[in-house]
Amino acid sequence: MAEKGTFTVKKGLAQMLKGGVIMDVTTPEQAKIAEEAGACAVMALERVPADIRAAGGVARMADPTVILRIMEAVTIPVMAKCRIGHFVEAQILEALGIDYIDESEVLTPADEKFHVNKHLFKVPFVCGARDLGEALRRIGEGAAMIRTKGEPGTGNVVEAVRHMRRVMDQIRWLKGLPKEELMTAAKDLQAPYELVVEVAETGRLPVVNFAAGGIATPADAALMMQLGADGNFVGSGIFKSKDPMKRARAIVAATTYYDDPYVLAEVSKDLGEAMPGIEIRNIAPEERMQERGW
Ligand SMILES: O=C(CO)[C@H](O)[C@H](O)COP(=O)(O)O
Image (cartoon, rainbow, N blue to C red; front, side, top):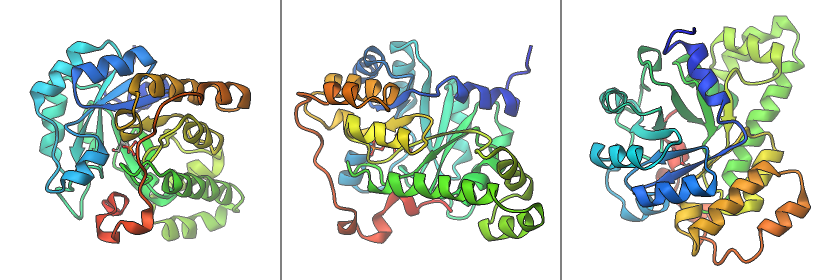
C-alpha cells in the first residue's frame, strides 16, 4: 500500500476529482446543497469571493468550528483555504483533518515573498497560477493540484480564459522545443528545470489543473473544459445566484457534458438570475486577487 502523504498519493487524490466541480461553501446547509447537486468536493470558507471583495478588510482562514461542521455535514472531500505563506493556518487545517488545503489568493496574503513549503505536509495542497511558470513554481514547492486563478468573485470568466489559454499555449510551446533549449526556457519561465523537462516530454502538467475564478454559468464551465481544464472550481457563481441548487446541478452537468451543445442548451434553461458580474477594468490593479502570489 502507498505511504500516506507522498507526492504520488497527494497527486492521485486530485486525479480522483477530475471531471468534477469543487464548490465554495460557507455553511453546512450550502455544503449539503453542493453534495446533492453532484459536487466532487467542497471548499469551506468564511465568505464566497464576491462577499470577500465587497467586505474588504483582511480575509483569513475560516473558523475551525465552521470547517468541522461542514466536514460533518457531507461525505465528499472537504477542502479549506489558508492565506498565501501562512504555514500556521495550514498546520491548523491539517490538524482538523481537512482533505485538501487551498493556499489561496482569495484570502489576504500573509507573506508577500514566500509561499508555504507544501512538501512538509501530509495533506495535499492546491494553488493558483496565471501561467505555466507560476504553476511549476507551486508544484516545485509541493502543490499536488493547480487551478488557474481567473479573477474570483467577479462572475466574469475572461481572466479564467486568459490564464487557461496561457498555460495551455506555454505547454504546447515547451513540447515543441529541442532539448538544448529547455534550460533557457526554465530560466525564462522562472520554473524548476526538472519540471520544465517533464512538461516538455509529456505535453501536460505533472498534476491536475482545474479552472477557477469567475465561472458563473454552465456555458462558462463547459468553455473552461473545452479549453483544457480538468474540472472547475465555482464559488460566487453558485451561491450569489438566484437559485443555487438549480445552477449548481447545471454547472455539474455542463462540466461532465462539456462537449455536447444539446445537453448544454438543456441545462442552461430557466436557471433564474445569474450573479451580477464585474467588468475587470473597473477593478483597480492593486485590488485584483490574481495579482497576489507570484
Ligand atoms: O478556489 C478558489 C480560489 O481560491 C475559489 O473557489 C474560486 O476562485 C472561486 O471563484 P468564484 O467565486 O469567482 O467562483
